[in-house]
Length: 294
Image 1 (cartoon, rainbow, N blue to C red):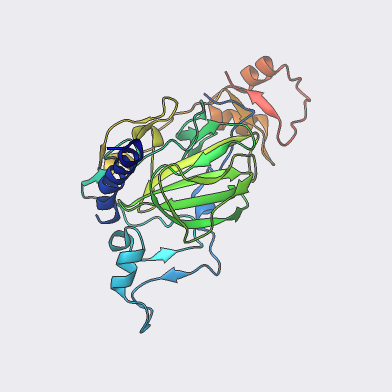
Image 2 (cartoon, rainbow, N blue to C red):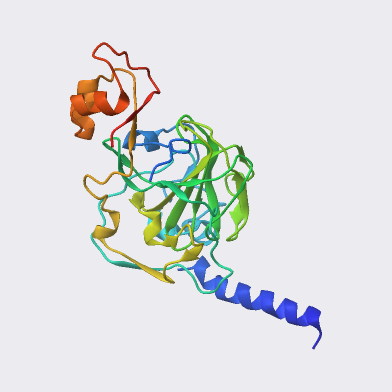
């Protein structure tokens, strides 16, 4: 048997295990991304496919065949970033991986801002350090549902996967896929950057199921570059955001902020804020300024 034949057989084996999937500490120089639900609810003229659309050329069976996890979602919305569905009460067992070729890390970089509470608001993804121009790749095989510019995410791509997961890749400097593109695990989605609401080059990475956010580190060892397990069990607890959890040591001043408001938000006394930031009693805060809170 020739080396070429062995190589071909190896590739075919990888494809064979993929087929079932079609059915079935803050670094202030690199943080950002949406912290509120409203960010995800922007709508416009995007295409929504569902069974209510009457067409002789397209049926529900066509949707189930061409659209990943159509039976789970019931639509294909190409405009809204995420739609929060009703609360999940059932237990869902997701198969994430069968072999080394069916998953890939989006980028290998240290975590600069974790999933959880940040500045008193929810941070629904994990920020990973990268350099502008670094390649960002799809975590799993799937189909591109969103590829556009967003005021907060900047250049953003959302991929829906056959098992029902959706992954989001934000702040890209360039998008290299379009809505409807089919991608394999490890395929190039775009180049890293700092577009949208961002304070430095990084990837804002999210994992969701039916619009509900799951801490990506429950699925991946992001810095080690591996899946934590080939299977992941979704329960209502999987979507919980740790109360009071924060990974920040600094606070970014927003429009309308005062030391007293920041003190209430962070729990740090005003006198402490003034002392560790060397602020006088008459100091003026600037929008975008960072204050130490530890």
